Length: 392
Ligand SMILES: Cc1cc2nc3c(=O)[nH]c(=O)nc-3n(C[C@H](O)[C@H](O)[C@H](O)COP(=O)(O)OP(=O)(O)OC[C@H]3O[C@@H](n4cnc5c(N)ncnc54)[C@H](O)[C@@H]3O)c2cc1C
Image 1 (cartoon, rainbow, N blue to C red):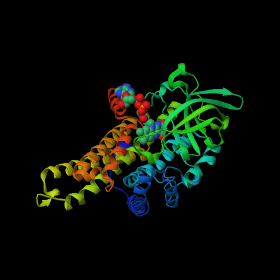
Image 2: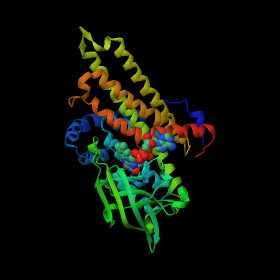
Image 3: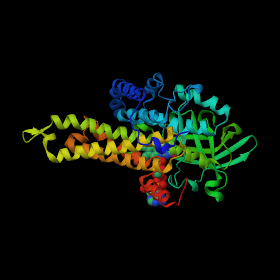
Image 4: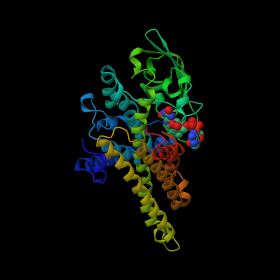
């Protein structure tokens, strides 16, 4: 296996990766974009658009062909997430939650029976997956989770509650973490695969949000939910490393989504700055507007380089690259927020009107600064890795 560092300067995309970008971009612009604003106004989850993703094999980019997926390499997965997020952040989230959190964990830690049961339907779009990690008491300090799993005959009983769960209302599979012993902190955490539609005692409730209504974020309550032995993922008490691996890929895909959103802000602002007139000239001729555009372009390129480097490191065989994943997630989510803010400023009041897309990007980008680890958490992790206080 080649040394990952030796390949880190090769940022060029292969012809196949360029073709994937072209194909996903064309499909997203022609088939998804015309629907997004309508669904946004109706506050409706884009369930009807998911088959359009499966037609192109976009639901299984991290799943190998033998399980029905379309995996070629991790960077290609990132490009798919980036291009889909450029147009629709909810569909990009469908791809990234199913692949990074659920499918990657099953591939790395699942039994053959679990792989055969879940991976082909995830790849075909018949099985939508959700990840149940965050709890009402907190999402950052997961080692102190309160949801419990108790051993019982033939399986486990789950009790507790998870919040802000994406896709839960429509999911056929939950990747759930629960503790078997709170005293043991992270060593008590265990991972499970739960089928919500066949689980008595499992309830899914709305979380009213000020924004992001299309995402249908939900609370998932486990009221003595029985999970059979076959639902255990990996081993008892080994859920934290499984979670760490899942988040490592998850942060890569979220960072790639942020690059897509940051790029979209640039793509929306350039033509607007060329056309919008003030003081008898295009606003793009004012240096203060040029300064913003220039900063936006630099941010997106900086973020993209971090994300692509991370993808390349993974493709070169580095299983975990947690420090780089934190760097990519931190910088790319900041780029997405800052580009949306600058973009709104360039659009003036139209930036906040429903007529233009740019205003919508802001809260979506803000959500990406919270999900899969807040910026504070990633800042702390990067310093801890650098100081040698943490290795995994
Ligand atoms: C759109 C969206 C989708 C989501 N989807 C999912 C999902 O599908 N599944 C899921 O499980 N969760 C999901 N989440 C939840 C998300 O993962 C959590 O919001 C996130 O992990 C933070 O947890 P919290 O909100 O409980 O904040 P807390 O953990 O309560 O943190 C509150 C604040 O304190 C800061 N903080 C905490 N610890 C430290 C520290 N050590 N040093 C400095 N600052 C600190 C945090 O950064 C934050 O600013 C989603 C969230 C959003 C917004």
